[in-house]
Length: 493
Image 1 (cartoon, rainbow, N blue to C red):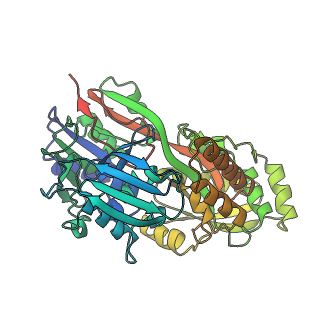
Image 2: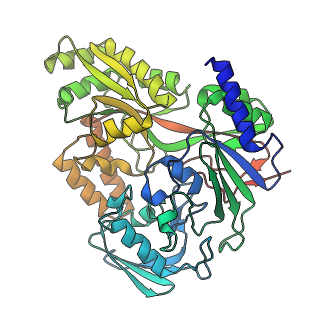
Image 3: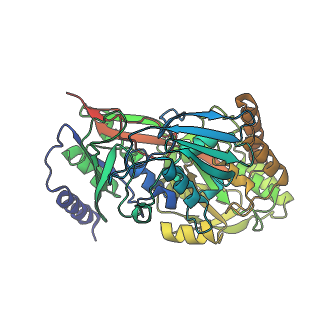
């Protein structure tokens, strides 16, 4: 189909989904998002698109993460921690109800974590919660957790989408009809088109400003642009950077450029020759010109990184100089590794612009040192199957958007294939440390090991580039955790 006609067809479909192009009411918002979630239960899926819709909107946890990445009280009003940091006792808010009218209490907390830790659990990050040895209901508004070892980030982990509280009466249906305790209740999901949420009247917390929020799935940049300009949608949290210029000088819009937890990496299969050779990985690191990739793939909005930590994180250390761009050094290392004429490899690229564009640039850079890459474009289902699950790949490019995911490198069965006992011991120590100064010191050591080992090609941190109606306030500029939180968004005159 001709691209113009294709875009027109998508625009017509969008207008149909919206029921016309009427301007939004002062208390309603329509948000364009690029990806439709595969389901709506964040405790049973890893896709960021799930949290974009439901995290802190429909579902809540005992704690919540704010826009600065700090832990705040959620369904728990406060808590106490034992001197040995192995027992956490939470006091729960009274008068909280789920959207189906059932009461929330400590039994729901116990049910949620028993479900996460069960043998048939499908929680995407069960490993965050395996240190929990027991969850005990003290009384309806008090619940106690016991851990088998100290977990320095336990309160943060309780604030992730993976740990939102669900009810036994509705948990099995949350994938399609989510029922939580949040300020917005699920109304409908028109698959392929939109999800509609409405403010929940009996919400226990501070009242929200919006009465209705509609998430519209628009994967085409041209259609998203036209929808914004026409007023068919009121904003998007992460717009294609190549098209931002259309809105930057338009007074009807505000462009919010912030940071994310999206470390974009050239993921390397460390178990597969020749990538199991340190000199080969070092050569690839020297062959990467980060700034050229940032300019070409993010239109200048990315921030260079030298290890898998976001630059806004207080534990971050700048390691971009570990292996500076140096094609001659790359060639010499390849020769030392036994590849004086280079080698051939495949690069599997998921269907996102930053990956496809970065792949083309890296292929050109690698060719100059003798590494010939075959670019293979795959859809997300194939990427999950081939790369993430079956580890059937040489190289790939993806952004890892989960905070504090450096611990994945301590898992030799993770798709990186990195197996370093010293690093694993360091992460175990880090996870068991609560003193912030010591945690920072250990985190810097961990980043330095990964940078020196050139485990992956550390490219850039994705920017969050939101485009919003100028009359809207309360949107998060930064994205320290997956989600598009609605609670503070409001219209102004």
